[in-house]
Length: 428
Image (cartoon, rainbow, N blue to C red):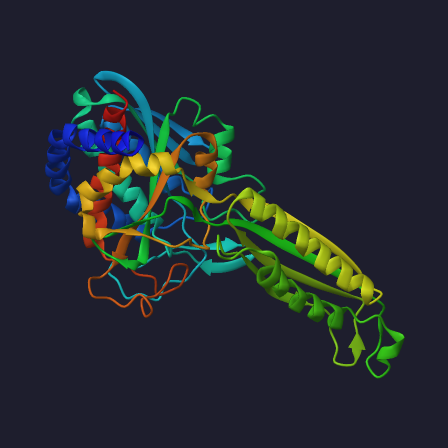
């Protein structure tokens, strides 16, 4: 019984001990709401792709310097890091926002609709904050202003990480959070917190999960080589198109027969198949590309092994050859149970118990996971859907109609601020 009650008593004490700072955070957040919305609209109108966020980074750096912080620029290409030193000794807590937009042409009719275009993978395209990173940057700028106004009362330091290229860079192998880690951003950090605006959760609510929360994402590339022949005499060929078709179907057995889906889901999706140029020629090769989503290193290893075995053996049975290439991108985003338990009272304090939602695993991916691999990290979803909205009808992330209700931004400012001060106080 003591092992159950003691953590709960400590959590309750931590929440009570922070009540004064919570009140100050709430007051300061209310004062800057209009500024946060103004920042977000500016970033939305002038979005920038990964590793190109120079305008965004300058606005961020100038703001952090105006608050008296030590600021480092050009971290991991275009990233910005600011350090706020509190008035009392204590741990260093990191807070992170990602800055990049997507190669998507916006369809929303807004006064601050995106005006930017860019070349992406050799193609001209519109650029849009179609995943909400504009709101992340504005929210964290607001947190920086709130916490700078109470720095003398902080028991520790806060590191503000404005990260580039979370969505990736098509012609670069290492980018975003992984590169920031390689450049030493996490070396002096004790814990890190982050959020993602979520268009399918109502404003005023927080979504979270203890343990594996978001999936690891990996790329799959396959070349199946056969023997070319006239389409009228398929018996003269080793048909890579038929073989590829069998391989696609065979991959589905991994999820239905090898993965224990009662523990965590997994996804293997083939997104494109290319082979041949003429209706009456069986080609020599077929190329397939796809995505893999798993939760946890053990499951990832299992799925990768079975993908290679299934495709290779199906190809061999047809007399073809298969070259299977799996490229690891982001590991799974995992909220450590201990840190989740510690920070749960903060979530309830900031949003109200009925507005804190324990979620199922999410098969989307987040490179916040690289930070979590270095130090304990906690990640939440922040509601961005208008009240009373239907999540099944609300435009999803990465689409031209993606839309966020700005009334939920202050909950984000308050939540990250609560997490930081409560974590620092909790180490007494």
